[in-house]
Amino acid sequence: MEKTTLFDKIWDSHVVKSVPAGPDVFFIDKHFIHEVTSPVAFLNLEKRGIGVKNPNRTVATPDHNVPTVDQDQTIKDKLSRMQVERLRENCAKYRIELHDLGSAHHGIVHVIGPELGITQPGMTIVCGDSHTSTHGAFGAIAFGIGTSEVEMVLATQCIMQSKAKKMRISVNGTLGPGVTSKDIILYIISKISAAGATGYFVEYAGSAIQSLSMEARMTICNMSIEMGARGGLIAPDETTFNYLKGKQYAPKGADWDKAVAYWKTLKTDDGAVFDKELVFEASDIEPMITYGTNPGMGIKVTENIPTTEGMEGSNKTSYLKSLEYMGFAPGEPVKGKLVDYVFVGSCTNGRIEDIRSVAQFVKGHQKAANITAWIVPGSREVEKMAHEEGLVKILEEAGFELRQPGCSACLAMNDDKIPSGKYAVSTSNRNFEGRQGPGARTMLASPLTVAAVAITGRITDPREVFQN
Image (cartoon, rainbow, N blue to C red; front, side, top):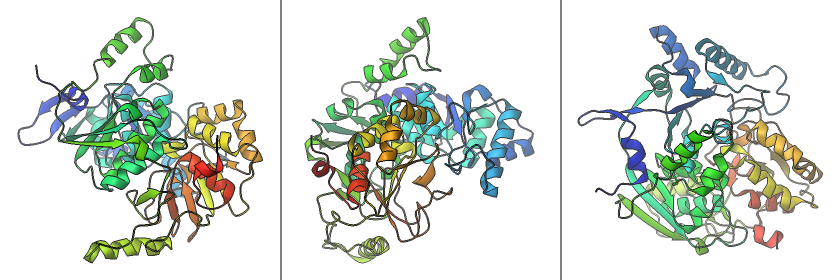
């Protein structure tokens, strides 16, 4: 019997038709949509006189450019307001489930899908957003698509896709104090580069990965796209099942037992072959931070920025250009550098565990005077839990500003922008030039590192501030 990978098992079971020397016609179980990439897709459907094939397989929420203050009021930005209004109109017209601003389950699309139990093992999931890879944490094939593909899925519930190559990245051993899943993925990307997994779908394995919570696994899979991968996934296990049990859209009763029996088959067979295998040791991973303008430009917070030794031509030129944008020099330490803003949120680290970890470490402390601290829950549910658990009180006493759910300062598509030239240490997923605002300088890090920076006002090793 042929040994197959988890990716193969899910992919092959969803192929409707194979096109010789071409892409597969690939069935999509769940389609998430938001206000930015869906309006044109719906407009094209209307022009063509086509309806939505399976409205019950599509779930919508506005998230990218919604304000994170005064969400009960009319959106001031005209384009943002129009996009949200179009989403409402289209969802009403085609009977699509919408978790709108102000509703109990509004939030970032990649946060509400898992917390509602919509995301399940063995599924194929797409969204007009690159960080759809987040849902792969459940043992699903999940990836971002473009606007024309959003239209295709709405119209047919299928997509034309060529099967990706397969890579397995194993992280073995036990993580040290102050090291989180965000540090794991930043470490991996720093080792293989922002293009190191291009063309691959990555399965994460190893004892360090298996020990992670579901929310930590989502952080790992979320940033798969930042090393060029088509997506990332982790085999479902008891951690997955316990997370899903009792959630609104999870199977119930006998259906639950049947689902779990199937989910337990979703693992890579012993002896299955990957196109590429990488192995890392958890003991080598420390708190990480980026210093450049792509997520692969990361180092341990205790290390110096790499020098240009061995670099030549365009590689050296682009490297120096990146450092110039950031205001850094080759060979200098990042530790101790002054920071202006910290941001906790996004589909990478805007979940309740992230907020709990920050609140735990800043309790009884005050943020530094030079720091503006924003904390943005990934959903209304996360916001509600933060209030119920007393986390909001702790954070506000420490000088943090808690905003309302949305993508917020992850990207410069709403009012939450980092001013030009200012430094932000962010739990989000991208540090491109202008990503958090024109001229903004972004350094990616874990929630614990962000908490340490907030308290000290400068780049800090969290292990030195929050000693057990």
